[in-house]
Image (cartoon, rainbow, N blue to C red):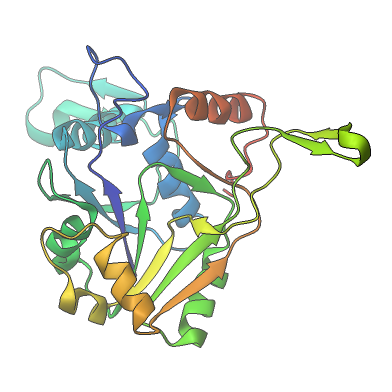
Length: 259
């Protein structure tokens, strides 16, 4: 089963304007957030990916061909040899078991259009989709089983993220009873980690934003299910988000590290 990953965005709110880069390549620890997302899927048996590339997609290709390819390992360069014999891998580090299709879906194509352009590489009737900037300790087997049990065209994972602000609890006499540090919201929001049947593509258009008309139409038709994920989930929209994920990784407390 293929997983399409939407990684065409710019990391403009994460890096300086003088240093533009794909958002999916912003690093958490020693590797980009995109690598962490691939590992979440690979560890649970879903290792076949289609990267929906956009802004500076060539940088993402280069990263996997060089830093995560042969040159990640110890190797020996024999300038006197030719062809494949010039570079000899010494196998110092175990390889990731990713199978990646790199699909150029246009620099400014909206999310729905990216899926449509890359869908030719999603060979099975059922495929997964996620964003290139969100991490979770999600049980993907449970998500897929839920989707199949529901029998709908699509399933979206919903989450209750922590509030951006702390809460002041006011008691009797207008006196502060307690402070609650960034409690979880009481609303469910789109957390990504989708599952779709191929019928989803029938009404998808090049100019569609996934979260608008396509999902709204599925919901109106009763063909969109909600998988409730109550564990860890965090998107990386801002520098502060990236710093929080970095702190978790460096502290050895990364809940999404299921491998």
